[in-house]
Length: 322
Image (tube, rainbow, N blue to C red; front, side, top):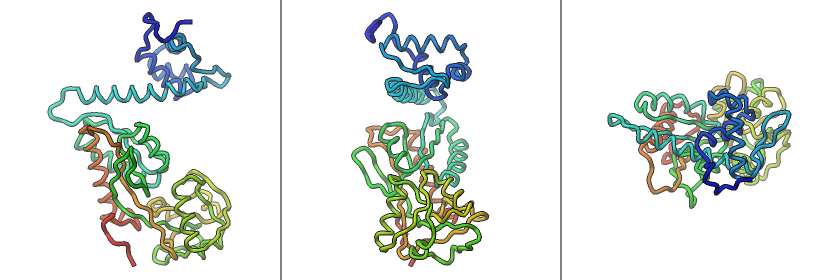
C-alpha cells in the first residue's frame, strides 16, 4: 500500500473538501450533490486519500459513511485549513478599500435570537465584503471551539482571561425563575430560591456553566432542590416547563420572547448574576474583518441593553440594582 510520502499521489484540496463534506453529511451521494460532482468522483477522492495515508478514513455501513477516528481527526484539521484558505482568498481579493474576509462568530444560545439578526444586518449593510459564519452553543462548547481555532471571536460568560484567550467584560445579567404561565410570576416580584425549591426543577446538565452557577447560589442560600430532569438544551428546558414538569432557571434574555407562554421573575435571596464577556484568541495579528465584527458585536450588546431589549442586564461598569 502506498504511504503518505509517495510523490505520485499528493493530497489535494479537492480530496480534503470531499472528506470534510462526506463527514458532515454522512453520505457520498449527498456529498456529491453538494460538491456538484458525480458520486464515483467523490468515492475516488476518498479512496485516493486512504491509499495515500495508508489508513481507512470511513466505515461503510448500511446507514451511510461513518468516519473512523483517523477520518474524524483529519477532517477537523482539513476543515480548519480550508477555512484559512477561504479567509486568505477573501482578504487578498482586490477591493476598493473595503474590508473583506470570513469571520466565524460564536453566540451564546441564550443570546442568539437577540443578537444574530442586528449583527448580520449591520455587517451586510456596512461591510458587504465580510462573510459572517454564526455558530451557537453553550459557553463551554464555544470556549473549546475558540481554543481549537474554529472561532475568531465569541460571547462567553463567567470567564476571565486564559493563556489562550483575551477576554473583555461586556455586561452582567440576572438569572430568572421560569414557570408555567398559570403560575403568574411577575418581573416586578422577585422569587426567592427557597420558594423556587418547593417545585420540581428542570436543570441544565452538570458540566454546563449555568449548572455550576445555580449550584453555587443554592449552596450559598443553604437550599436543596428536587431535580425533576436535566437537559443540555435551553429549548427543552422551556418546553418541559410549558408542559408542567417543573420550573427552571434561565438568564432573562433566554425567555424575553416567551412571556406569552411562560411566566418569569428575577431570582433573589440571593440574586444570581452571570457576566457576559467577549473572548478572542491571543494571536499576533487580528485580521481587519475580525476587528470590524468584534466592534459591531460589542455595539449590538450595548445597544440591546441601553434599549431595554435585554432584560435584567447591566453594562459591566454599571452598578447592579438594589
